[in-house]
Amino acid sequence: MISFDSKKRSSGTRINCDFQDESGLKIKGSAFDDHAKSLDKQISVGKNYAISKAKVQDLFGNKVKGFHNYELVLYKHSQFELLKDDNDYVAPVDHFRPLSDLDSGNVDVEASINVLAVVKSIGAMQNMEIKNKDGTIRDAAYLEVQLVDRSLQHSQIPITFWGPAAADVRRHPAGSAIKLKGVVVISREGRLSLKATGVTDVEFDPKTDDAQELLSWFGGDDDSKRRRIGE
Image (cartoon, rainbow, N blue to C red; front, top):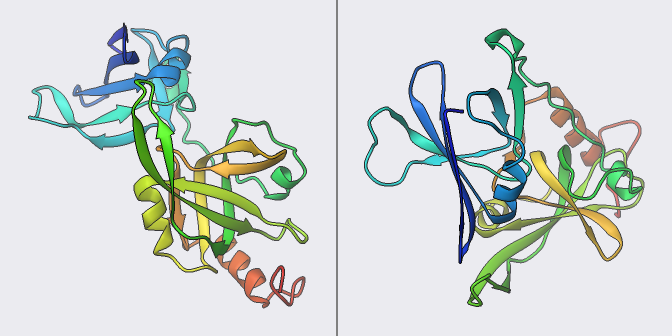
């Protein structure tokens, strides 16, 4: 990271920072409010980091000389691995948690985890009024989806999607495999469930052996399960 600026305004706290990659071009980064407060203690100017769980989006406005045409939106779940030199970086290996960990409460609230599951059912699009920090009210669309995997006996785990992500998920049928990276664990009515955020990576029907095995299990082709959960 080559520059860092934290500002407190009436509308909240904002962090602006610039990164530079091996190409020599810079990358703008920003974080807001609680996300900014969390990151303020994690990153320092002059240090090299491997960054994950950040949202990449197009850079608004005219292209800035010396900068990439995209920027990073950073969250409190964004991860910064401090690198002493370029050889320190090792590509991460994704670890997927079984849904039974949530069903049994064996995972921390607010943890960011990866999940591979099957969509058992998809609810209807709903709307909720949310109060902004400035007192105004905005209407937010959301969607609840029920997930299962072979680690569960007779239960299912709900996950909530918001905004455009909810509308996109609604286009996919129940019975699809879904791979979720960076989904957040929340507690609702004394039970753990999941919430997708702006940095959650969502992929339907991934072309992997694990996903195909999961679909076979759900469809009843697996010897360990000849019928779907709840049917």
